[in-house]
Length: 80
Image 1 (cartoon, rainbow, N blue to C red):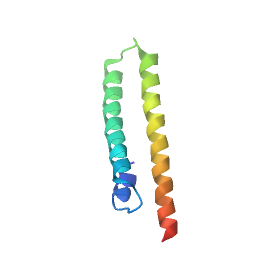
Image 2 (image 1 turned 30 degrees about the vertical axis):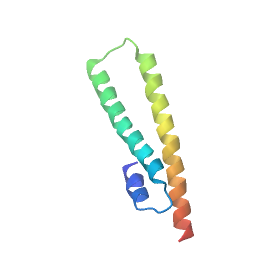
Image 3 (image 1 turned 90 degrees about the horizontal axis):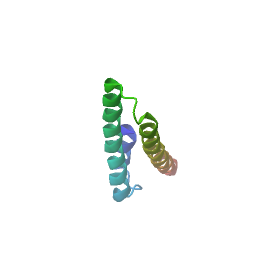
Image 4 (image 1 turned 45 degrees about the horizontal axis):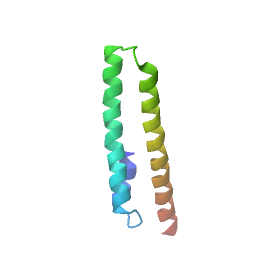
């Protein structure tokens, strides 16, 4: 995702507001990664199912937005 964001930052096709939103998603995923690592280190069993559902929801949403960004970048390259 980091590489796609860097490429998009130099794009004239990508809306800056959309880019900010994706950067926030990227930051959120970093936070989720830390939460997962901490959760695994503490080996908590209580609430595992709910935790997995929240994380999965965030990952699916981020993946959809990244796919959209990659499609836009592909379109931009095709125009060149």
